[in-house]
Length: 131
Image 1 (tube, rainbow, N blue to C red):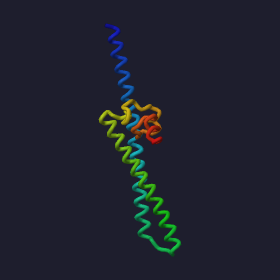
Image 2 (image 1 turned 120 degrees about the horizontal axis):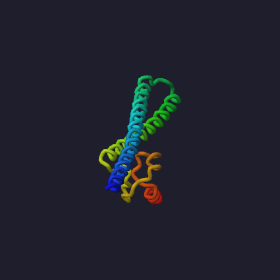
Image 3 (image 1 turned 90 degrees about the vertical axis):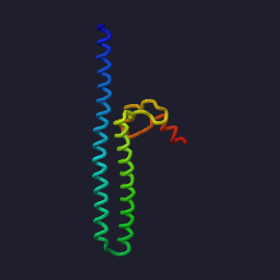
Image 4 (image 1 turned 90 degrees about the horizontal axis):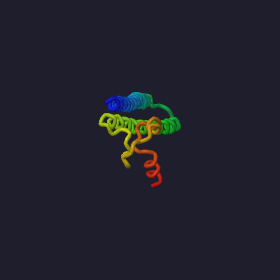
């Protein structure tokens, strides 16, 4: 009976450690989400302010247009990243976070720590990139 009690305690610790690890990732993703929303909001405000004060000659407009286009491209990237973060948070909620969508194996924790919104393990990502 002592052995089964030890096994149960070990199982509880392992489940708790997994839960704590996923909770750490969830907190990191929530912070990323907050930061991304702030950046996108600031970008939209800057664009709005720019349109209010749109004066200058042809070269000023050309330079401003190029800057605005670059800012919009960056904002699009941030919005895409925000979508990925939200998707990762949903996967944490439904218990599928950390499982490769291609091979259904667990994604390495180091990979998830570096890219917490990834959906693929390194091997499947490399296969995808090779085409």
